[in-house]
Amino acid sequence: MPNAVVEHMAAQVGVAEPSCVNGYLDRRATRFEHQAEIAEVYGYVSYASAEAEMIDWLDGQAWTTGDQPKPLFYAAVGWLRARRVLLPGVTTLRDEVASVRKKAETRRSSPWTWCI
Image (cartoon, helix red, strand yellow):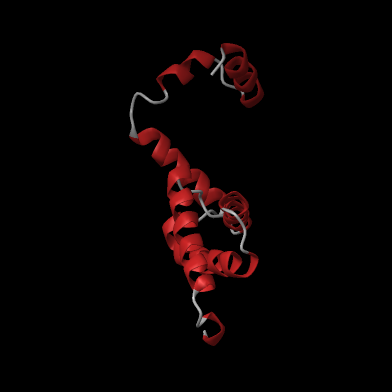
């Protein structure tokens, strides 16, 4: 992060020595502990706790809209944000979207789709 940005933000939150940011990741667990604290304070939940519900919702979107992966990806991000779910990694969500979309395409191309 540029020094000017660190110094500006440090001044905003009252940090006397902005260079302390340089050691933030010295202990790997620090960022995970802070993420957990922030999630608790603001009411966010883990992706694992909402994953099944999100996949069900995404399946409905993929099935009814026939959207391409990019709009489905952004729709999933919006769904997660609206429910205060911590976002998973980009590749995790990309893979979920691809899997759900593929299943929807398979159902759509089946001659017995209307029976479901």
